[in-house]
Image (tube, rainbow, N blue to C red; front, side):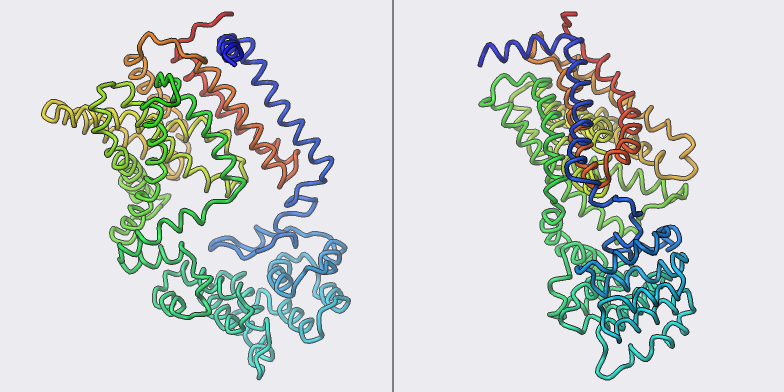
Length: 538
């Protein structure tokens, strides 16, 4: 075992070996994805029909998305095959009909013919055809056309659902919410109740949300996120805190979670080696682990700050200059850096007593890593892992470096308050401003043409981190080269994310979307290679 570790350590200092491994992992990951696709077939979400075609499970758009942006025209035969699927429900049909009708994917006669051939009952066929005819009409006309079904006695199942889907397509959220709520009176209409809650939430209708929360039928659909938002709307700060743990736990999905842990493993190894951790049984290693845990907890603190700033201060995201800058600086930058620093603070007295500045910096960096890992789960879930390689280099390291610098400054301030207060404030608010401007260059419309500023801020922060790191290093020769850990970690993260993304979208689509993004992110990797002196053997 010892000989094997020595061999790894020796080979990690060979540029040729590291590049061979990196290229091998990347190429191997792409080949593996291609083989798996050949065995399994096309991606489960991208199989020749557009994602907005009948293959979508829930086409209801977010506010501001027009139906014609979401729907392309699959063939008549594709629709016939879709309708013939025995798992297809009437709700599926009613969800897609408004978008297909407004996008002119089929003619009314074609759709009526398809429904006539379908396995649905005659009243259900008539309802779907009536919904098609009502698509794109004024709200009063829609209600008039569907009145024979929505006004039936006894009420007809799916009648109000058809009305709600049309209102959704027309971006009339309140009318959609009321129609979903009306459909939700059927015991089996769980999806309608869930959508009613979602629409009222988008509308910020606290009264409706309170009313539905008190209804036993809505108990299972009023999830932690709804309770979190509702508590924020009502300035119930204790309720916000109570909603945060289940909200965080609810966001864990196995695939993104495993991808996050796999990616984070390399950064944790990087920090442990950089921090001169010499044993897994050492106190320093334990502090690094504890730092990651505190970083995960800091996401909960950030969520509280988000609710407080949004509902008490009215601070929300905006692409406009004034509001956008306020959001990025006082919002994103301040709350995230403050949350991480607050969660690092309990470790500071222990670190000060141990009197090792490098340890202070690295443990603080581990807090930043924990924050980034928890944040990555949501990003990887929404992008199906598509941004994993990019975030490995950018967001992960940004949080590590920012917290490492502020954490080290906090330790110096606590140790010598009178002498170090100015330094601490300058470093902390400097990092806050850097973080805010980094996001502003990506969010605010007026800054988007200067998005290169984000890369400049990132590089400056990285240089400051490595300046402090180089100053604090001892003469210790790490068992594995830091550059090798970083490069192999990036390649392995890309390969794993490529396979995960290709499972859903296919290899071709994944290659065109992930490879350019990963290549752009890799361009800044020279910072890690140039700033860490290594004793190369070739």
